[in-house]
Length: 248
Image 1 (cartoon, one colour):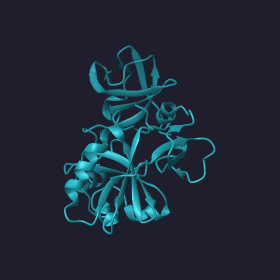
Image 2: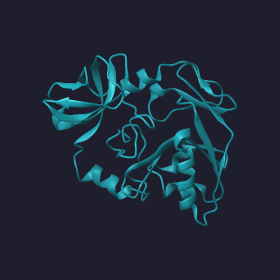
Image 3: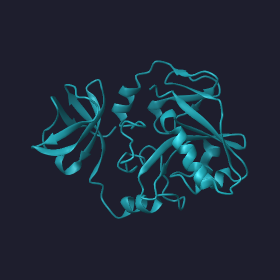
């Protein structure tokens, strides 16, 4: 499915900002400064959905993968209770690109290399090689590197401006804060050099031991989930050879 196949939800009502602020990983009060990247987690701190939030007048637009939209609406509705918040389909579509941005476009807040996003009546992109961009900068994608087993700090959300450690409580905050302040990450997504090819999801081995999983690949680079203590030895993923790269 194209990454432009997104559902753009509209959240409206007097309690919208406070409602989101108490749920998601980033500081929604910064929407006046531009789009905000955030996630909704389980109470155990695991990933449920990632999305971009954008102020639209007094409303908030929520840009999420179509594959997660129905479940996200259901989860948000469960949390809504008596809050003055209405969740609806905006009817808008996503355009994105890395070249000259059209009028009304906004900058993707995750990384400058991801270019711009525009919300209107047209869907599509400018033909940029998104997998090459993502593998170069280790940017995970919904449903590929980001799964229900994901902890967002292992997925690089701090580097991608998707979590705020000063905003106060949100669902899953306690686990996320503990991973940040009380433990050293032993596993996570990293950019790797890939010699050869292997299907997405191929197990990575080092010295005959399980070392992780290889995901998106493009132009001799890839995104891998690795155990850092085993990533110091030569690694293979099926017939491909894998080696960590410096973080860009």
